Structures are given as C-alpha cells and as structure tokens.
Length: 194
Image (cartoon, rainbow, N blue to C red; front, side):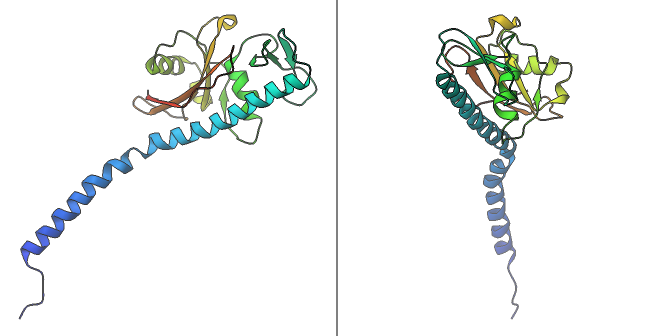
C-alpha cells in the first residue's frame, strides 16, 4: 500500500495556495503608499503641535492684533512672523511655506529634510502639486516640500506640505497636507501620485 498523496490532493493544495496568494498579494503591494502616508501623518502631528505652540507663545506675549515677529528657533533673534490672529505665516520678511515647515518641525524632535527653494503656483490638484515639485531645480535635495498656492510670496493663502522621498519617479506616491495661513487650519493627509 502506497502512503503518498494523490494527484487530485496535490492539485487541490496548489489551488488553495494560489487563492491565498491572490488575496494576500494586493495587500502587500500597497504598503509603500501606506508607509508614506504614515510618515506624513507623523510630521502633520508635529506640525499641528508647532502651530498650537506658536499661537500659545503669541498669546503669552500679549496677543498683538497686528502682525508681529517672534523668535521660534530659540536663538534670541526674531525669525518668524505671525499674523494678527497668532498664526505663523513665514519669515520676518516674507510668507514662506518652507520656513514654516522648517521652523515648526525640522528643528524639533522629528528630524526631516526640508527643501528650501520650491516655487509656488496655482495648485488645483495633486498633479499640479507634483509638477511644481518635479520642476524644482534641486528637488533631490529634500524630502519635504513647502509649496505656496501662489508664485507671489505675498499672496500665499495656503501652504502645501508634501512628502516626496529622494529618488522619486513617475507613479510613486505623493502625500501632503495643507496649512491655511489666515486661520491656522491644517488639513488631513491626502494621497496622490507623481
């Protein structure tokens, strides 16, 4: 008497393994974009804390109804400007999305690299944001990009804070959140692609 498996039993096992692989594979394929979103969620959390601490510091210093300069780096010199509502809007000389991200997050406990020369422009969708990042002369220099919704710095209303790891290519995930300068509102993380 033979003590082996029949061909039918082997075929059934192979079919079951194929079905399991087919259902599990899509779950593992999408891990890259989920990982990027998790990174963005973490930085967004640090950013929201920084915005809140800036507002609290503004209130502690007297809640000036006009725009005022503040020292957010801790070096004793005024390096950032807050509007009359206490929301950070950039450096002491210009609205600057890179600076906002840099001063609130990069200098803190969450180490990130901020590209400091991204030019803003009209951003209607993720593709427009991706195009501005790709067009940046030194996009390989940073993983985080602060992009204003207007090429004229004085007219920026919304900052798009995007995560694009070094070496990104077409089809790679692009995740970002927004910060509204006038109100201090920080959006949830949005996922797209280059």
